Amino acid sequence: MTSLSRLFFILHFSINVPMRWLAGKTVTLSDHNWSMRKMSTAIDRIHDALVEIEMDGEKILDEEYMMSIFEPLQLTPLDEFMKYIFEEKKGPTTSNEKLSSSKDVEALGRYIYQELFKPTQEENRATTEYIKSIGADIASCLLVEMRHPSKLTSEHLSSEDGRLSWLNTTTAEYEASKGKEATNDNSESHFGRLTAQLEIF
Image (cartoon, rainbow, N blue to C red):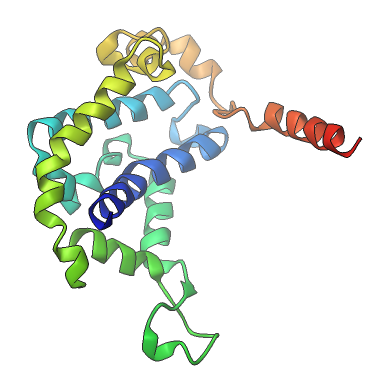
């Protein structure tokens, strides 16, 4: 369980967190040559990183490699957000010595980051060899899911010649999608309110 927790936290912070930020902030990134259709390049980056991990499972514990997956996108606001998460964002302390004061806070992201890639706790260090041994298998499973024709991600992959991939995006489509939402939050909010009303009445 500890091994899987550490593994999935690595995937969460190196892939999920930046992708969720990109999806939510795409509408505001026109000045950085980013657009809704360019989100497919981020999906390509995930795919290509997983291909590398599939060939060398130990890469999944390579701090520099995992935390630089999206660097080629050259999005300064994303870099600043990730720095905030791991170096500046504060949270309640987890240190037993400080539990006496509810006001004590520390950069929890920095602590989590350390335990993921350079663990100090014995139970975390003990998971290293096992994670290395399953890294390639995890990557293979994720690639199967991403490439499957029934999954929308396959339509965004340049390697699969996807309909919505960056490979098949025209300049006109790229320009037209600047400043556009990359999520369905606006439509989902209406459904949410409708559901709430139906539950009341």
